[in-house]
Length: 471
Image 1: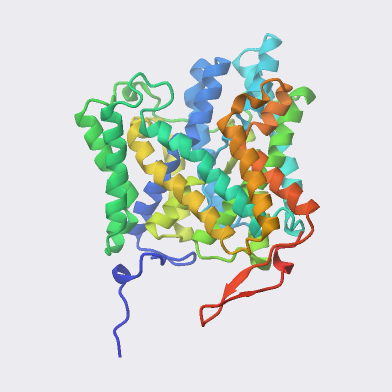
Image 2 (image 1 turned 135 degrees about the horizontal axis):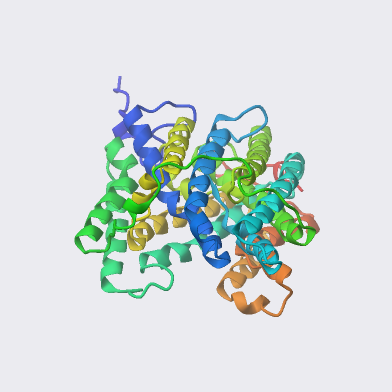
């Protein structure tokens, strides 16, 4: 009788630890650190942008701390699953970029009336609090709207998410947006060096080396960047040691003009989150069809809305599921929900003790870009993998072509909407939004449903009914 395979000898395509497995603490912590490193900059960047544009000054460090704490709490809620709330997956929550334009618009309304930082934040958090109820309400019907949740729509959305984020990864690899040394040989060497390390380590048959590929790549890149003088810790010592969460610290106000753009983005976020959660299900080797899958999407989007409401209460901006962490799951081979508890704990600690988070902020953009580039590419590949399960007939190909064409067209030529009203730009300026809405509309108007292909034991393909992906 053949001996059972050891974990280190598993095929590369298999998970080392599945959803309900409990990995050893060292493996769980290592995986959690990689998730945090992959998402840290994404969590704090929207706050940095909003703070800079609206002139929030000394309030920004506190807002950053709150964004990390709420992301930790939201991640725990998603993974732990409280009743109907949460997906039960490693769905890391973080501050959403999708809300930037609408949040800034609300801030300018308050600023235009002569308001200072407190008045600006009071209005922003007020409209974001009430807007969260729209996503909460919509989540209760998503499981019945098969036009929204089916392999064709979610595959298109996931692929678009990955493809649109690749530009972010490559920009960071080259040095970061508007960096004075953008594209320098030093930046490219750092970025591609990290990318190469991750690729090489990910091929290892040793479970710990493979699962830690991203972490080791980032650490080696960080050391190399330090030697090259690209790391500056001078600002860390001036940071606060402790940040205490205070509900509605800046007050609470409301304005209908500021509310409408925020409310519309909450509608779009539900579609985007559905795509993210589908990708997480797939890389976690969970079903992406049927009752369990739809229940997870419903609970995940509900959790998304409740976490955004918690974010408004505790002085940070709306949350959503992060895409890059699906790449971490696939590259590390660890899909255990228990890893999310460690992620949550690390994020909360980073928020409570800003000086620790300050060290993470020094991670050079090229080093981060080398890691995120492969993770964003992995997200796009996950979407393609879902689409590959469909019968790619003329109808399906047309929906994909138009959805990708319009979505990526907006991303490539953002000025196409510059003559449109600001609210139109806010809603349709996102490649994910345009691709998702186009796929939903065409899938509804074109009644012939795509069929799933199943490969039989003999290697031949056979059609199943279309009921699982019907609208």
